[in-house]
View 1 (spheres, rainbow over the protein chains, first blue to last red):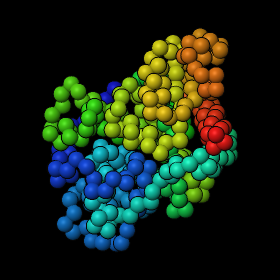
View 2: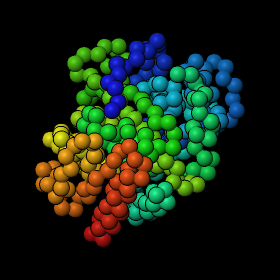
View 3: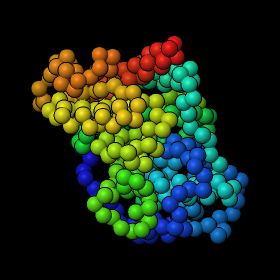
View 4: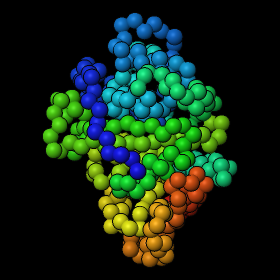
Length: 120
Length: 203
């Protein structure tokens, strides 16, 4: 059982981290959108939180949710940061699976099923 | 928590470079039903947790204002990851299901293939809220009864009746601490989802 945890008081308020913005500059980010570093741009001028996001993503790809989890940031704040870093070219993303029709759902579900069965 | 997850080897943290597709399933259930245990038993990474401040209308707006009145609530989101092939990764998101119409729910359910509802036979009534939310959102689900040490073992037929499940909704038993048992519960869900998508495709 997970102990009930009091949300940790953040040292810096969310609105400071996001420059007062509540919504990311693009609306395409999902919890499982994959994030990788883009061009090797200098981190000069980036806020400490944005630097942490770029540093975290340097060794390999992570989902937006994992970035939030590793950096102990709320998902909504993470999305604002990731979107900004996409705009600046520091990060690129790969869209997650989006169900468009039953056929594509079945295809992905069968892959999931094969993968799960292989783990038994 | 530092910016680099120092305690884990990079291979235990980052996605394989070949991964192209990320899919997600939800693991939902009331407080203390075993969601975190379930996700932890299956995840290849140390399960992560993030939190989100929620309101009925706009989550971050209130957080930005720095005020937390009674309409806001903090929702914990535990999640884990399973690399299922060189190019496919599955994320499992575990969350309580009481909160209705919140941004996080929409965020989690968008693009999700389905949900596994964890239930506890000693508190079956608490599962109704969760199933109600999933039905409102139109997300298909299966139910897994998590076996608790010392709890009486109910016949699944009785549980099905008590939960008022549709005849086609899969109902299985699982032990959330056990990787194989938890995997089998997910398999039951995915098999159901395949059949359901097949039927929808034919209609």
